[in-house]
Image 1 (spheres, one colour):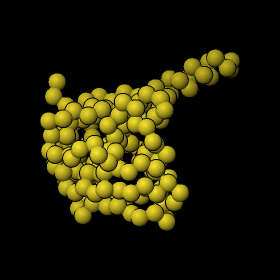
Image 2: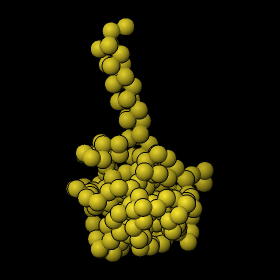
Image 3: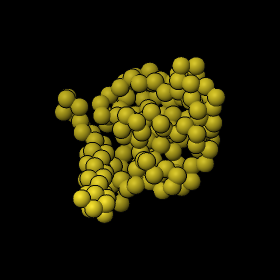
Image 4: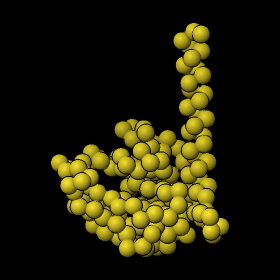
Length: 172
């Protein structure tokens, strides 16, 4: 099979995978409880140097933010490690497939961040200030966690201002 055909087939598969991810993020499914879930505006591929992530506009209270979206296990693990400049983004939204008690570290992260944890319905649950640990590892850096199980976590550069209000879709 010619190289052009293989490349075209790979591109079609990649676009299909991206479309599936978009559907997954846009329709963040409710857990087995069948309770309400959040719907965000559609996601798009993020701009360089964040090409492995998608981006979305989300509301926190009455403020609409342009954020990077980490919705796969590898994206959530990578997070904002190594990031010093956020470009056009106000932060990163971590989207979990169900409620979790996962902890965060600042391993490899040179920028101080604030994290806010949100329930499945968008209610803020907890927030913390996270201190950089650029030379550490997940095993050696402090862990940060919500006091309650959460569905979403929003990381923003420290000093971005307080997070006030529920997480949801931006008004049209």
